[in-house]
Figure 1 (tube, rainbow, N blue to C red):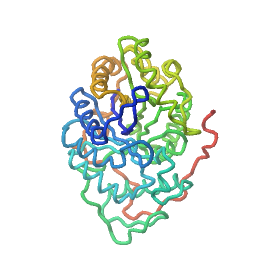
Figure 2 (cartoon, rainbow, N blue to C red):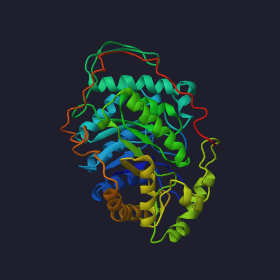
Figure 3 (tube, rainbow, N blue to C red):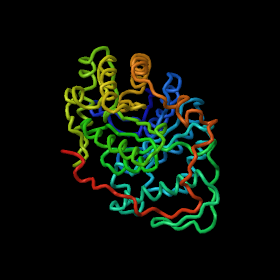
Figure 4 (cartoon, helix red, strand yellow):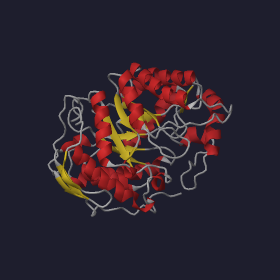
Length: 388
């Protein structure tokens, strides 16, 4: 298994102490965490994107550029790029720039986002979120794979003159993953294009995410895509990873913080059922406990999901020195055991993108230089995906 550190850059008070760092310090912590993650051997670092709520991740491209400047090996990812509210031309330009700065280390994770307030902010209707995502993704992948593109669609002015975005990516189109959290639609879109899927595995019971994963794999096979591209990433629950010598000690130390943050989040229909720390440790996706407990939980999810990439998030309301201590313990005491028990070809010789930046990009026989938006994309009814 490979390992990612994800920071969606929440900017919150510690619910126990009331302390909060400045915006400048919080952003610099992200960059320093990425630098330290590379030193500790993590495979990728991911930056989230939010345009509403208590986050300072509205400009992930800027943060990733800063990370690119202080790292040399670790892959740079997003979690997620909220493509539904963005202009694909600008996304192609900005992230190709990061790909150049990092010399081919970029991989995008796209999605429609988990914050409904973003849509009116950009003058868009929430009712169009899935159609926006499907149309904009079709254009983005074409802009990265083709030059002299003309295009027409529903949500953006047409590209009537042949258009080549610059800069071009460093070594062919970067790989694009699809983030999936609540519905079959993102999983179906990933399968339609033969792309990898990233399941949030954040707040719902694991069985709910398994429904989305199974749908993705069924649709992927139905579309006849190369199985070498079928990778799966998984999150690690809201609240962040926390490691102590024993699970009891982890619960004692981190429980008040976890429960305070959970109690402070009240978004009807989007709240975790794991309200107390004991429940979260016993049945939820949170990686809280001894190293052995955390290893066992990751491998239990792997037995269900068979995922290739495990994402973790640090408890960012804790003192930064403590966050880095947790990161180091995870790298030294958890990662080796999980790697040995759950091998993967992701970013290895068997992965078509494993040699990137040397890899020149996957062949895309279906990506024509002239594109018309595909409004026939089959939007799956999501209303009954989850049993509440």
